[in-house]
Image (cartoon, rainbow, N blue to C red; front, side):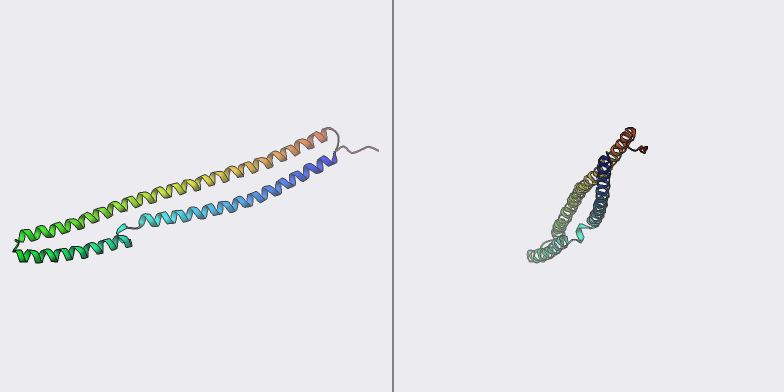
Length: 173
């Protein structure tokens, strides 16, 4: 009977040590999740605040378009001068070049919208993954706590049975 008590005590001690170790690992996991969430939120805020027209791709496209428009305008002006084009024809030519520029700006705006939609989708998917990992961590903590509680209750019941059997009664001489 004493061996049962000792065995139960060792089992409880082992479970408590395991529970403490699991608790420490859970705290480390929570800290990592918190860091990952902060990094994700920082990335999201930065991406959403970035104006597409400030990106190197957009700047390069606009620069190319402006240079191309200037060259085209010079060629058309020279052609118009040679052909004796009217002022109305010159305005129409400039208007067509400006329309090209406006179309390019419109396309870049659409690209910005698509990029932000993509960033938002990526953020929500990653956030969902972090939420799932946090949920799993909470379930694991509850499971560990429940196992320790079950073991303690089992030990208590064993002690009550042993006491009821008179194991703890002082022997009379």
